[in-house]
Image 1: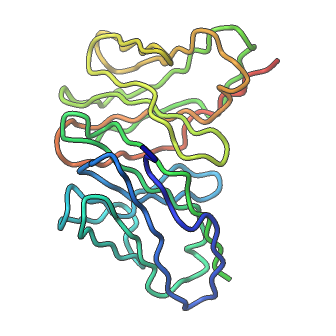
Image 2: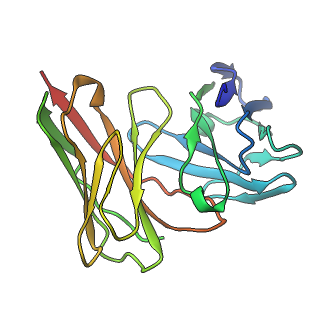
Length: 114
Length: 111
């Protein structure tokens, strides 16, 4: 198993551009989440999904959209990038409800918005 | 979910046990204690979790006090590769899958 994969690893955007951060997992996990991590801070939850077709907002959802059309993929879309969205983005997945707190994280996408 | 309090940083000598404390005095009866760590520039890694009883796995031991208001993560023989930020998180079990990370404890293992 590849686990949780994220692409791209690095990205530079100009203010106002849009882009999609990709996340995929091959463990057949129901639950997937997106976090952002800013320097000196812990991770903050952006959006999460408890299964295909179901998404919900986390702590800091503004400026981001998600969808979950398949179990494997959970892309994060930045609609109009802003410098405040410069951050490291982590995607995570976890198995069924009995182990819902056990999350497997991807390697991260480092995003710089100029 | 209950909030947690951890020291900002700790040092530990290589080969010695590292004991990382966490206070969660407002924890509810159905909330679990989870520990994750994040090595520099990598994604967080799950370590261990527990509800009431002490737990041990190949990575660490988790000691939860009888009143469940605090816990300690123990790395029995710390190595330089254990240098990381360690997060203590409490959350309810069940279907909603939100882990709320605080700022954690930076453990520096010294040679």
